[in-house]
Image 1 (cartoon, rainbow, N blue to C red):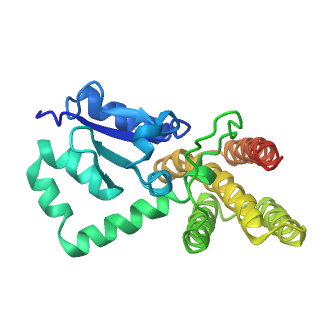
Image 2: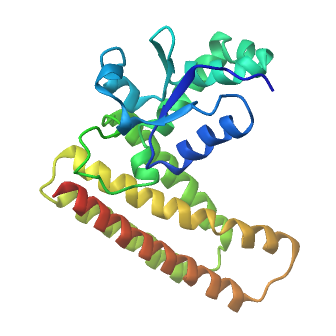
Length: 248
């Protein structure tokens, strides 16, 4: 594995996915030991040539020798491409790169509703992406459609249970929309709520697969379904507390 030296990825230390893949690059030998740095630890000198706003939206790769920076999917393609040139060539093909950029933006602009974290108000430099209305709406739609499909796939005989679930979901959405919040705050709540539902729905996948292979007793399906609902409610409450803390 070839090592890209004197290059540093600036990552969001509150994003588990960011921590994992930046550490993975170093462990795999694709970056040297100084190949990652938390965004919040940028020095004043580094902020003179790094676009801190851009870097909060898209991960930045800093060339420490030439004091140059590239962002987003370009930075990831450069790191990967140094060890696997063919992957960089494929990734830079126009239709593929267009798709990768959109996918990256979709994840990056929604990462704080996918995995929320409390804002460390004592830290001046926060790696918080800009609010993007288009990508937030797309994410909510994606979560709702995927969740609806999985819940319906789980068991069509739970008419009563699923009616209660969908009614509760609609009432919660309606209550959020009626709050005297700005459009951005409403979509922060809805984005987090959509993630909780999506997370709970994905937890149904193991038993959906089992049901396709085995004839499980109905009581097992019922118990599992209500366990997932309980987990989802707990996660929603946790997210609401984080949002309230960040809005103070």
